[in-house]
Length: 275
Image (cartoon, rainbow, N blue to C red; front, side):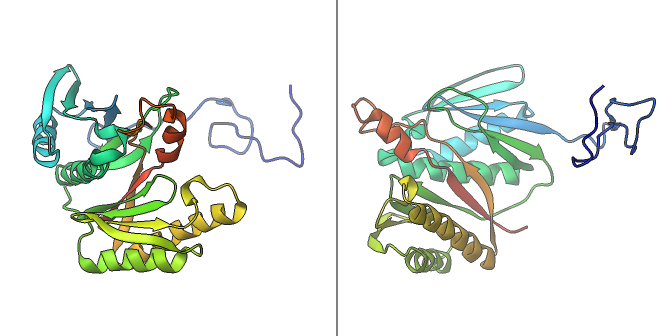
């Protein structure tokens, strides 16, 4: 029998007691009635162009179909399903992460999260469950009361760009701009309205591909300031999602593929009005 280290942490006996007992080592398994059991389901971002629902009730297939039809500009290619799952194949390649589909793909995710919350499904976790190269997150949702939540996104692009997509009003957009300008000590190269309802700021340096300790720290301080700014305006971070395969539309077949994959594999942030 292993000796207990007097300087180490107290032993865990698994039975809720402070010492050995007849149930030593046995886990405590709580009992749940069917009324108290939580219900979870998964939305998986598959390949470069697919969304797969796993474990959702059947009516959520139509909720998702309607959302994709409205929110994805080039539409659906096809869909198929089986017991407990349904997959939609989108036209184009939304999960490549750059090029002309980069902003619409993030906007699509805003619509998906909004529709899920309206239907009573709230994101519990976004997690990587694969060791494959270029994989993306699986989104775990928990069933709950329906909620109408205003949402928008902040994305970190290439090595030095940051965007706000679909800000709910001009005040939020201006707060974003001022926070970035005032928080990034390296300064700003340029800023512009990249497209309708998407504002982009290009920073000096390479904050999303930093090698110096100072720039690594500064990138985190910028992120903290953004969280503080939006929190003070009544918005909270509700999701950080890796939704890129790691190849841009322009470079996925080039010798820069590996470098390009590294440069764009940054989670997108999604904010929602506080409940």
